[in-house]
Length: 349
Image 1 (cartoon, rainbow, N blue to C red):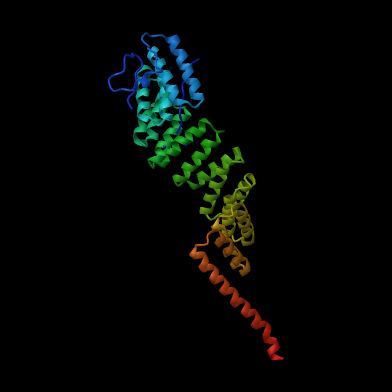
Image 2: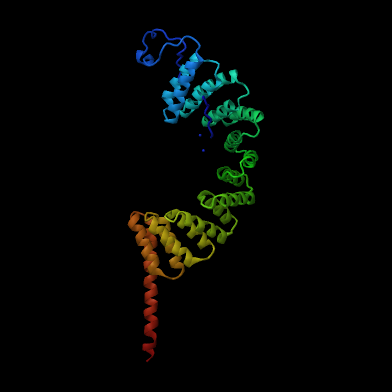
């Protein structure tokens, strides 16, 4: 059975095989080597080429699949699905204008086929022609308001146009259509945050975490919003859960330390920075921040050790060199002060 491919938006002339004669002067005969002469309409034979094309698509061989779909179209030019499949491959190959040309052929045959307009809009989005993309996507929406792909592509176009509230509206409808889809709920949360609806975004991220407690994107993005609101303890809790999911992720521990530090939990923050350094030994920011906290606690030896370790990673960093010199000077003064204090009682004796 034939099937058609659909695409979802994450942004040469056609060789006709309907009638093949001798190559024109100055052309490359090898271009036509694999093309058999096809003259008469033959839907049964067209279906054979169609299925061969579909198999090639499943193998990731879109260039070869295009040729098979062209053969099928030459044998059965009234099959909209063949043009849709050909357009799908051309889009995957980055030949967006050609993809749209094939979709227009499909539209002429089957003007009420929603997939045509979804893929058309997607190709325009891939070309970053977002305003133009709204036209076929809105047509698809009129044909099938409950199509999730339409809503997601419309949201992508609106987002890239900076029309964030309209993106939220589309994604809200998509989430209503698929309330258990973590991906859609997370995308909705991102759009809500872009639209300035922080509390709604927090609620959507919480819903995503409820659906999938291991979703790192939802937890990290929720922590970022909580930090923006000054809710550092909650942010740290969220990042702690994220670190449980991915305990080898040094960046998570670094972010966790940042939140703990902002919450005033210095000792715990140092512990997380130490873990971040252990996991990512080239992260000079972790060394630097950890040194700052050690200095805050009066532990100059700890601070100096971290800056020296950072310089081992980035020996030409003049800022780190200046900080190291300052810390050593401060430690020298601290040591002198201790010695003077120790000597004072004996001088009175």
